[in-house]
Figure 1 (cartoon, rainbow, N blue to C red):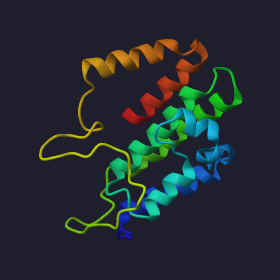
Figure 2: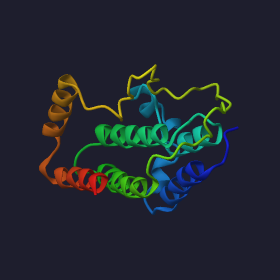
Figure 3: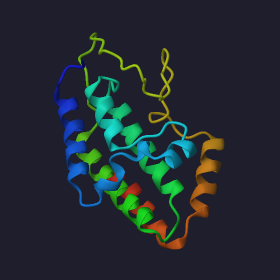
Figure 4: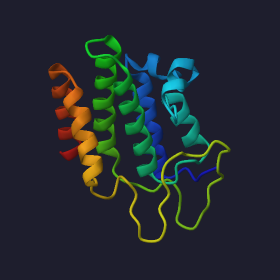
Length: 171
């Protein structure tokens, strides 16, 4: 089990706050939905993130945050514009980013200690040597193009939510 330091407590608090949000119920156990697991290669939900945190899968808050962003992007990408699911997922994604801004990038385990790995694994990219993870490096041209194409597909009414998320992560 991973060491319960300040970073762990902050990530745990983010999950508590998310789970207490009025819209959280529908996002707690999405991985149980056959449709969701069919459409998403690494299905995430709030319950899965909570289990990964408890089982020591996340070694840094960065890994936890990356999973959270991946989860909200998955849900927003699969939900239809103008639906309650889309608006609630955008609201929850924005709330997640607000909570993350309070977190910072704090290690979840002490340096030199190896947390027990869960059998499921994290699914994120591992770094080797001096190579930076996807959240530490600038986007490649291909990633920027894909992001632009995905943003262009969004309906106009959803763009303000995206802008709010970006602004909250920069502030």
